[in-house]
Image (tube, rainbow, N blue to C red):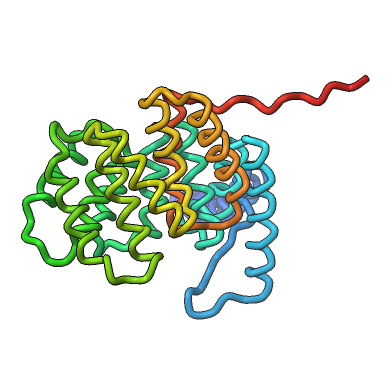
Length: 295
């Protein structure tokens, strides 16, 4: 019997209905088979409430690798390894090295943002530290100028210290020196460590004010109470200004050696050590180590 046009149309629709899902299934299979997949790095994912022994071990291995690269001066390798492994969520043993790597590579804002995770934001110093690290001198100057105008609430040493992180940020350091001197008066009866800290602040404030002989005396007094490389870097700078280039070079070399040897310490002062290294290297650059002469 000859099929009518209506019958042929129904047959075509039926076949199409059967083939359409099959075509989609084949197309999806081909896409799934041949589409390139992005290879994700094996990451570190931390639950703040509980870190597994495996995660702790992987962190220790990564930190050892980063320290080795940092000691070799390969900060590019440090930044890439940390970024690929844990991105912007690196745990505390990792992110300070990651931050320093980006900062040393000229990515100052990224380095500062990574370092910010370790800053105590209730301190008047923290915002100054962040702006100084970013190299935003205008914002830094405005911030520390506002700190100087705040009422005295027993934070004289913190405020004075916040004002001396960058060179030549203020037109006049008289108020900064006065704040540091007031803090010292309040610390006279305190243990040597507390007094040494305030003496260091006063020494740096005097250096910023251009009073180099007084600054050197206060820094040496601080060092006699407690060894601190914050003294050493500014002793080097003072000696250079006072014409004692031999001691300036010796103190500078000691400071650079300290920075290399203390990479593993994870000190909360590290960001300030690095800031002052930048200032020191502008006038007393690090000298490359001498190569051993083989017979």
